[in-house]
Image (cartoon, rainbow, N blue to C red; front, side, top):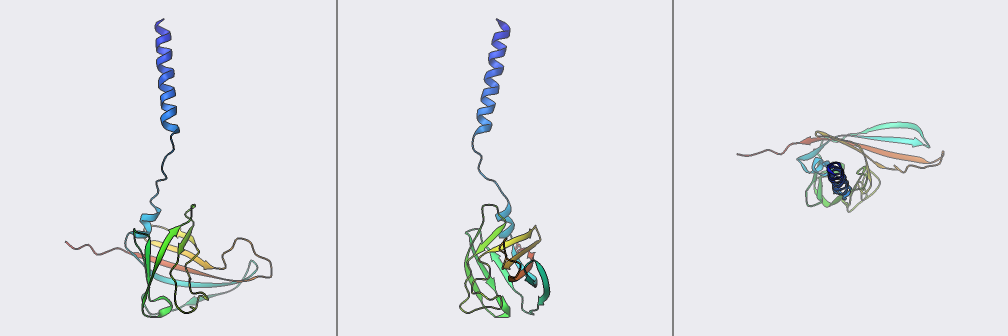
Length: 166
């Protein structure tokens, strides 16, 4: 009789623990906070030219103007001095479900050297860390023909921590 009580108690505890662990958990991720802590200063732009999967050339896009990408916790963003042109443009940002793509709908009134008015509408994240962020834009589709000419721009940023005043 005593063994039956222990058996039922252990079975009940096992069932309760399975029930508690089977409840849906909220997705908890620190990726958005990596974007929103501090601001991102552009370090380099590399432009890759391909024919199919064959790389034809690599160009370094030079600019002597400081370019800053800022992401806010309210899902808005700004980019200052894009294409070496003075000014700041604002938009909204989000991440894909897989958090491998950044969608920033910053729109420039005229075409840019990137060949579009929305250069960051679909950016593939290559690296995102505490102090660096690298993403690619342009012809980043996963499937292409062997005779497709493609241009991919790789942007490299470093984080500038905000100055804390006391």
